Length: 113
Length: 114
Image 1 (cartoon, rainbow over the protein chains, first blue to last red):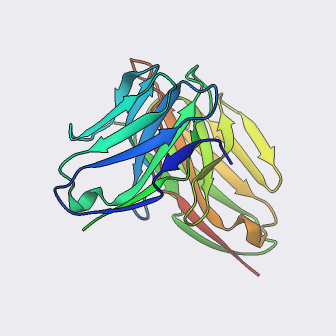
Image 2: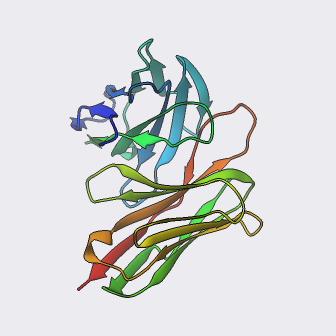
């Protein structure tokens, strides 16, 4: 176990809806990264938060947004869901000191119908 | 844009045999990671390789890094069924801004048969 927890584990939504995914980072970690993993693919970087500020963003549209809270937990929000948003969403936490390991949570499986 | 290519994408091996998974990347990086993912589970960190010529070993797995060739290998020795999983390499590109973004390969699905 990595100490990174995500909720919910599974979610079913319909096209056009909005969704919020949550992540609690490992104790002592101030950096949270979010990744999208489509079936049969490697994870793709969505964005990263370091001490409550966005610190890097991948090639995802603005309808993907996030927050990091003072306790370093984080949320990923996706608006106007599309069918292609169906994927496993992974959260990873790290110490944010460079050269360190990102520890992944078990993920949230999102299905958009 | 950094590209990370793994091969093979699928690997079926017999128990007791040796094999190597390759990971090539296209631009300068200061570190490379290997992760393991079991079906329906999250990613488990296996190795972090930080410098040219770095070699790390854990049990039947050994990872190495050649930064000049932009190549990492994951070598499996005397495979056992428990090693069946998908293995990902992930590269941290050197960019401005200091993001800890990782770029992943597509993964190698390893099946070890009795």
